Length: 168
Image (tube, rainbow, N blue to C red; front, side, top):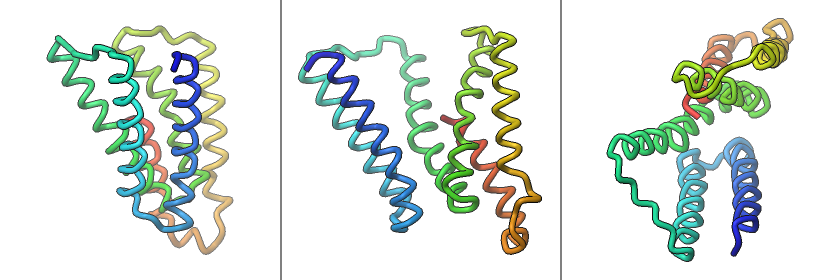
């Protein structure tokens, strides 16, 4: 299998597994831990098979890099996914997904802090417009009377969605 084929299969598989997860959790009431475990296990099996079939050396010589990779592996696929699912259960799939996808902004912000990447004026303008859109989506005045009684859960759900974006 060449790299382009592998990349296409990986991308489509990941998108499908990621996209179907909220449906399974929200509609079918499947356990979020089981769904996350299945999605991450499928990824590990696929990547490990590819590495072994293509004799790719993935040995990491630097202990600091290995520790960082382990922390990223736990914070993203494990911790952030569970926080996202907790948010989804409180505020729904649509809003939770929109808010948690702020991970793109958090990644840029963290890259700037670590001096890995420079943020331009266009980046800031785009982020402000995107966050303005989120503000419209989270507008408390649009909540139905029924949902207003759950305002605490709503605020917690929004907070959890933001936190999941940071960890991703």
